[in-house]
Length: 271
Image 1 (tube, helix red, strand yellow):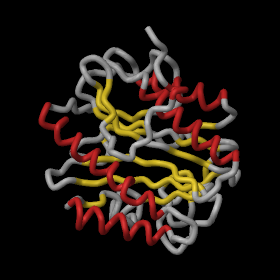
Image 2 (tube, rainbow, N blue to C red):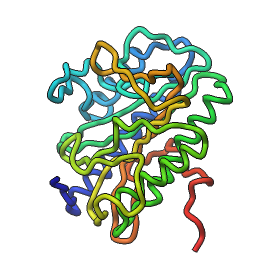
Image 3 (cartoon, rainbow, N blue to C red):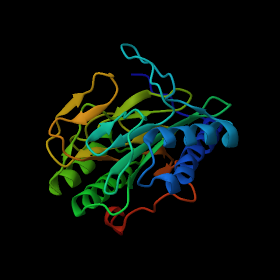
């Protein structure tokens, strides 16, 4: 495992890339309404990145070994889609939940990666609770990030909060290091044991992006080789931030004017 500790210049560039990714979500939020297609959301985001930001959508034509090129600029994962949903003709309807996953590449070559959940219209109590607990899980993980902590501390905090709420953690997908590459070491599991895994050091930058299912954690991959759904056809939710390990704790990099504040339930205990 090769983990690249970021320089001061890297960190400054990553702040820009991650803010730009978050601003795409700010821009698209008003368009996430009943009647819009996921393909329209993709087209709007693509145009905003290209014409307003001067960034490149990282998912477009992304093709890791064994996969066909991803055919869109964002991922749109609706209801029982866990991740990597391909935008298309699907029309959002009242009560749907959708994760929009955004990754931009700046002209300097740095990647910014973040995602948010959106509830279309008036969601069910189940949908709202799943989205909220998943949001809290992400922050429970973020709150573990500091020099000297371990990756297992992040995963344990997320797993404990999710399972106490009655949800399951998807284990096939995880967070990842990021910088001048879309995916770098280390992998950030969203389950684990306290004190296990590598020790965190200042200069690490990685995503924390838990995926929670309302039913069992089992997955099924669609014939397009990208779209991943819950095997039980239950709802699934995901939130994602990119986080820097600082000398004294952490800094969340994927922040913008529209970024949802830390939930009070996930705030660290007072000293």
